[in-house]
Length: 321
Image 1 (spheres, rainbow, N blue to C red):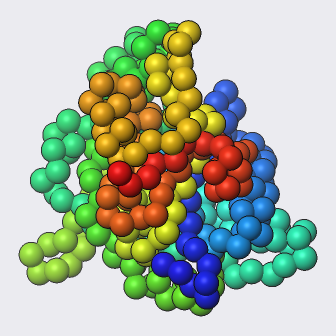
Image 2 (image 1 turned 180 degrees about the vertical axis):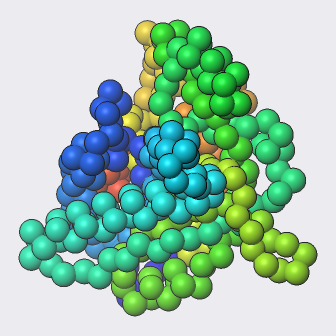
């Protein structure tokens, strides 16, 4: 969607834009990481692009759930959909605050707003029967099995080969519709940078009478980002993660960066098992869906290469056949 001659980039920020591996995730840590990311976003804006931002919330939601459970003897604990809303506000505030500061350092005042958003999902989605979304900290197998027994967590091994390779998992249904779509479009048309659908949006189901009811789940941020990009008619879908490229044979001596691939190439690599299901596969699938629905191009890159990636000088570009 061109607005005043400028292309709209939908930016899906990975967890490393907020919390780096090995960090405790303190407020200071997260603000520091967000500030570095916002410096890149300002540079991107100076290239002449309009932006809308979305982000993940896996570590934050997992940690907040622990706080809810551990404090439940003192105050009532909140369900996962409410925790999703809490983290939308938390992370949205961090990005809104630091992006405003970054623009001011660049002698510019640009309106920025965080919008708490609800994502409609199907209550019959199969992921409710077989949860797949990792949240919270990593555990050893013994720690995970103990939590399974004592707290009835669903747990899975997500990173084989390391000591703490287990995590709690929760349902991750596919996004169907974005409730606040018209509000988002109104803000965009008034040149507001919108931070929205954080953590995939708050999952809700639509009742037969049309009313919305929250449901305990976490929507995959990459697929939610693609749904957002589709709804706002974005020109470019930029997925920022912790690697500079998508790789073939990732982690092996013969790993090879992919600079560009067509939709057909990407589907073939997925069928060949090149992209791990818990990490790169959802990002590639989201990019495929975006391009197939009319998007100009999708890009997967690291945060620090974001501006170069938009110029075609870094990252992996997914284009139509």
